[in-house]
Amino acid sequence: MCCRSIVLLLLLTAIVAPPLRAQPETPAAPRMAEGIGVTIERTGPQKVIIPSGQHGLVGFPDEGITFLSRKPLSFLLVAGVSTRLMQGSSLATAKPVAEVIAPSPGGPDNGYAGVSAVITDPKDGTIRAFYHAEDWEGYEKLGLNGINNFLASVCLATCPADGKVFTKQGPVITGPDAKDTSSKHPQGIGTASVTVTPGGKYLLAWFTVYSPAPGRGSEIGMARAPAASGGEAGSWWKWRDTDFNEPGIGGRGTPVISFRERKGAAMDASVVWVPECRRYVMVFTGVIHGDTAPDSDPQGGIWVACSREGIAWSEPTRIVKGIGVPCTGRECTMHPSLVVNSATADTIDATLLYGYSPSWGMTVEAPSHHLVGRTVRLKMTDGE
Image (spheres, rainbow, N blue to C red):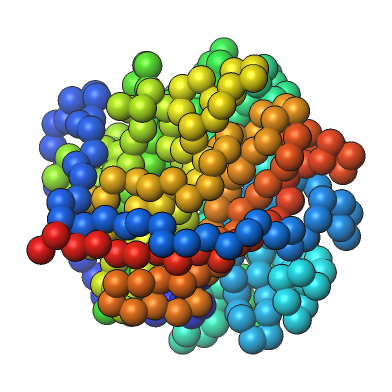
């Protein structure tokens, strides 16, 4: 979600979806943006914002932080397997007010329901929350960390402007592959970051693809919907090769960020449009092959890239070194989000928020990942 733009315009605009055409099963590799890049000019020290166990919270943030308002401060925080509404005078003093979205018996979110993006309709204030849903039924636990394996999907829930009750609307973006409980890795599509294009014509979503071709790790895909649709089922079209031409439900897209050449995985994108720079800026977690091996020196962590249109991205630059997925007993960094504090045409001063654990586990004592942050200055480069 674009943390800087709390209220995102949903204009009554319609588009005609492009026709479907025959596609090969294996999509092309993502194309890289030419002539632009982002460098890390400086970073501040890592600081704990909410420690593990505070207010009884364990395992957070498990998606990027999603803000409902900045004044007064109100945001959604995923802890464990559900989403809490947090309110307070600051991130550090905010307290959970209510559990607003939780797993349902049966259905696509029977194991997990974590909000990863929010948009708000200025006409009536309706909140539309896009959440990462996990189907756990029939799956076993993953050997790496003991977390339940899953089939993921991006689901939608809506809430009145002043309410705390979200009504689930069902899946809006799903993967192309059938559920396979014998799979040894997660399946499906999840953890969507959603924003509105400048001018308010489209919604753009970037999401983790957990079902890539054999021999590849998770990748980051993209979809588009008319802003007037509110992101409902049937409105999304995935990016495939040269256009948004694959249906959001079940279609097979082309990744826009991949760590194929690094023999790794890219996931958990959080994207913000920065108008001063005229660029989208993405932070995400990247895992390099071998990072989770015992006594390894991790080469992954949290990365940043930029794009003019959200499709072709610059070569990613690492901000924070670490293991980008939960790994028992290891130092882990995951689920980043970027809050832009100020910007010029070529410089962004921001706060990077993310989950961190010095020795990951799912108990307070372990401790689980918890909310930390650091200031960063990003320098945009342009070869033109």
